[in-house]
Image (cartoon, rainbow, N blue to C red; front, side, top):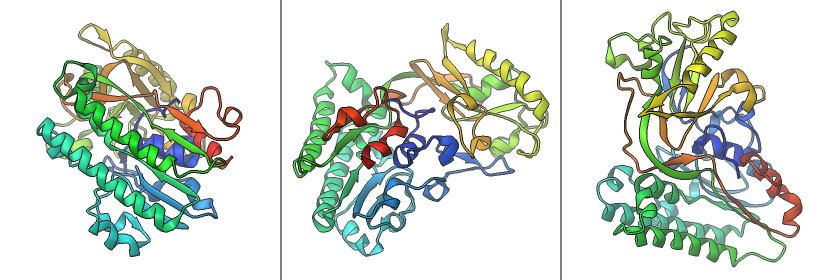
Length: 377
Ligand SMILES: [Zn+2]
């Protein structure tokens, strides 16, 4: 299955649960600029501009750990938000389930700070978090007997970011632990799949794929060098360092914005200049190299990849990197640095459907936007 562009969890899951593209559901990344400012904020579930599929179903739904669904919202059943969920108390609907969720010792996510300390702690965190999630899922399944049950395992993403080399290097001392974690995930899937009847639909999917990464590329440093971006010296001011005369800046995961007049405080780009500027930027990024290798696989104009009533809030360009490069949005003068993580996302998600007539309901080349219609059937 093809992931979203960019292949970022908040964007991809928003498409999976609404059946719409980012131009319609309005989620373009983990962070956004607040309107009329250069201040970043985290969009959350309340910013989603299309309804999640479960909000329109009459049958009981149990929805556990879907990313970008915080705070939990009313539905017929139970909803436990996924990351980013700052407070457990707002991640549980109905709130009457909160004492049970707390008593089980449920964790929304592994502690990334701890998990990056050592391999021992990483696998301990992954396994403990998975055990708690499975216990909660089992409790909610028994209690609600849901018509729709959805559980997201996020440990499979964390293990990929921190320990992809454990998988690729078969001689690595932790290789077997990496495989063992996925066996546990398989057992969980098996235990729930075994409860289904012959007319039920089983869908197993990922929101993106994973591959190894070597370099973090700082797009804003490249934009400064290319003369597109001018920053003042005050490091504390973050994105408000963007000065008049800047024509473009980047946010993480390859999102490039024109510094439009009327949209941003020091906006410097008029409508009439946009086309020429986008051509220049596309050529600039297409030629960008690190260590003699081209960084960018494709430069996407927003009209090519998105449509809908929120298109004007989309980044003007989305850059898709070649393998090994992660596209960063931070403001620094370093053009690139070695990656701190072992693995990063790519756009190769997967989709498995077990259902009567599955061949007819699953498109030949599905995207994350097709999942809702598969569930509806
Ligand atoms: Zn991830």
